[in-house]
Structure formats: structure tokens, C-alpha cells
Length: 319
Image (cartoon, rainbow, N blue to C red):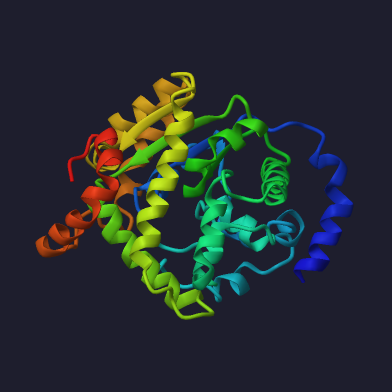
């Protein structure tokens, strides 16, 4: 069904897809479990943005055509009620990571580490461009450009994209979109570490076709460093109206004030339309409380201090 739909879509929409360049996107950056999903969801309530939804990332080559005839009920029946790792509901219209579109589109991505965990080092290099094969980089860039054109087909809205891997790919994203804007969200590293451990255990149960690697902890530790080194190598070169950094704690405690500053810093209009929608979204089946014990946090801090201490200090955290 996907192959047939993709062939029809290529035939019917090829010329229109390349007719107009999309507006420069806004990218949400940040490590997994740092609040990127919450930030992406909140910004997506602003109708000047268009964010990829679940159906689009599951059908990246065919969503323009197949969505017209595939029964919504049929797709919904295949989905769980929540993401499993937290209380975030799963729905076809929910904003999603474009990295999932690349994964379903056959593009090499670091998410393959959850399918083939014994090859973790090979796939970890796909987080950024430093160690990735140039052919893989070129394939990913071509895919992203095509996906964004499809996403904005028939509308003039601003693409709103979120994938944690983009945090270390700003240089690549600027090749495609020199005027792109970025919002980087960070969170207490101890919370991030403990939550990522839980996330990886969940993903291993769902997707792994091999036994897990001997040391998931080392993968998480090195991934965090790789992601943030890639970010800081480029972030300092961006204009002040091109990048804004926010803390997850501030977004949860003061969503209106925090997002208002994002709009102001990036020169975006329309915050007055978004602001009244924030309380409802903040309360939808989501817990912002820590669930770890004090002993877990102390043990995690002892692991993280020599590994993430310098990065944490740069973001304003003391481990």
C-alpha cells in the first residue's frame, strides 16, 4: 500500500512540490527527555506553524495522497493510547519528530540503535555529521528537504521541526535553511539521565531484535556529550535573533512568560493568539513531577559529575 501510494504521489505532485520554497523552519533542539516534546506541542498550537504529525512520519513518501482514502479509524486501531514511557497521549494529529519520517523512509538514523543495539557505535555516529558517511549525510539532507516540501505543500506556514539529533546538526540544517531559527531546551542533567535510562529500557522491549549491549549507561553518557559538543561548536556563531535557549523548569513553571520570550527573541509574531491555549495543553495527561528516589539521584550524580559536569555547568546546573 505504501509503495503504490508513493508512486501515485510522485506522479501527481512532483512538479507542484518543487514549485515554491518553504519558509525558513523553526527547529526545537535538546537532548531526549529534556522537554522537547512539550515545547514542540505547545508551539504547534500556533497555526502559523505546520509540524509533522504521526501519520506523516509513518508515511513520509505517501501522506499527501494516501491520507485521502485510508480510513482514520483503521490507523488508530494500530496505535496505543499513550507513548508508554510517560502519560503523553498518542494521536494521528500529534506533532512528531521528523527523524521518525527518515527512519520509515529508509534513511540511516541513530534510532536504529534500538533495533540493533549491538551495533550501537555504528549508529551513534549518525547523530551528527562528524563521523557519518558522507553518502548517508547527503541522503538525509535530500530526504529532509523533500519531506519539508511535502509538509508545506498547499500552505504558506512555517515548518516547525523537532528531533533531538538536530541539536548536533545545526551546521547541516543551515546548509538547507540559512535563515532557520532554533529553540534549545535544557533540563537538570540528573533528571535527563534517569529518564533516558527508563526510555531506553522501554524502547529495547518494543523494538530490539538483539539482546541489549552490555553497557547502556556508557551509550547514554557518550551520546549526551556528542550531542552537546555538536551544539556548542555551532551555536556561538548564530545571530541573537536566530537562537534562544530556555530551561525546562521555566517552561513548566511559567509557560506564558517563557514562550513569550522565545517569540520576542526570534522575531515571531502571534504570541497573543497562542497564549490563551497554553493552560489546557499544559494539563493534558502529563506529570511534571520528579519520580526518582533520593538514592537514585545521588547514585546518578556520582556517575554524571565526571562525565557531564562541564556541560551541565555551561547550562547553569551543578551536579
